[in-house]
Image (cartoon, rainbow, N blue to C red; front, side, top):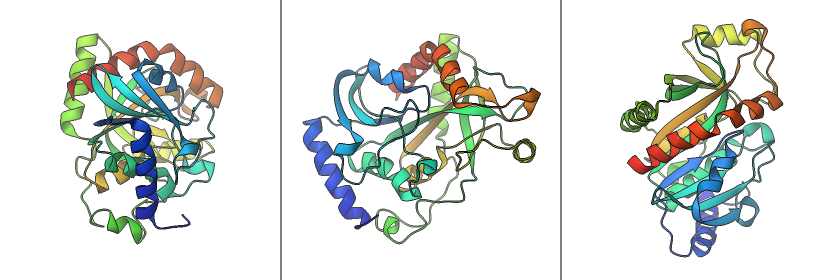
Length: 275
């Protein structure tokens, strides 16, 4: 980043507040691959492209619209990222974390991060939802590993219950009420953009990871750094490479996500309403 993190956040916050015209979102939602259409359900929406916000990277991933959507879902003020920033797009760890820290500056206290993931756990099936109970950050990066993030909040912080237990209980209750099967498991994040190898899949599964993808971990670290509550939900869009002969593709991920958007919407609306 060319100038100080705090100055960039101040500038971005000023632009966002001007565009939000008094709205005060309390829940942030990051939509993963294939899940961007949920943003269309936000009512009284204000749209702000990432390119309008100082310090924000533009999203280049397939299907990631690349804008903030602010409005209401179930009467709750939300700030939705319709598309995320990935490390594999050339973004630094701090650039991936930037919109999360920006949400915190805007008063968002709870972050819901979602993604499409591959299943390492062979009992999982394509189309399953999995609540993140914990994570393994295998990106090789940490957004707080620099001088400037220590000015935002204390440098050293606990990652116990990184995914808020209360949010997880709420999500499970919503899923039961709606008749949607939801698993709980450990998520492992990679840098990408290459999919994992079969040897890596076997290794990650032996570590106790249940799902794998190329996002989320740096967002969660950034959110916990500044004290935000976090909930994480993966949609299993493929079996990880080598499991049952699986060879993941980007197209497969988007196609599977399209079949589960109705249930994803029910889960998100229920959780947001209950926060």
